[in-house]
Length: 92
Image 1 (cartoon, rainbow, N blue to C red):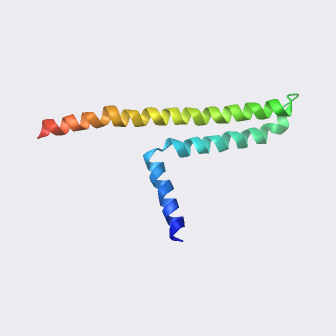
Image 2 (image 1 turned 90 degrees about the vertical axis):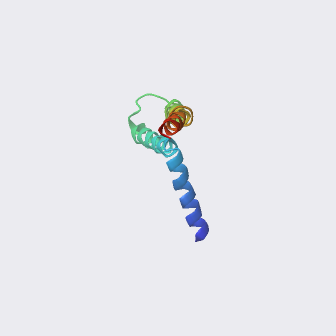
Image 3 (image 1 turned 180 degrees about the vertical axis):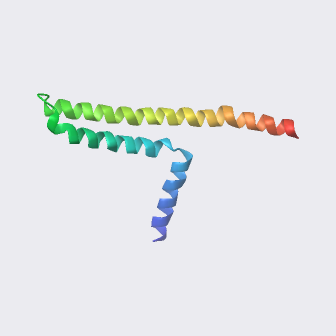
């Protein structure tokens, strides 16, 4: 039971550190679910082409979320943190 709690708290800690990972996962599953739901209305498109489009859309969303997450963490590390440190030095 304790290993389950440790894994759950680890996931929550990681999600707080980088909130774009759960967002990317949720977007991936939402896109896949939507495209699977819309599969019956695909018209004369082949099944393989429809599945390839679904995969590309889902992966594109995940890559976009990861990119935004990296840019956000770079902003926090290299822009926001040095500004806070300079402000702390000036206040002393």
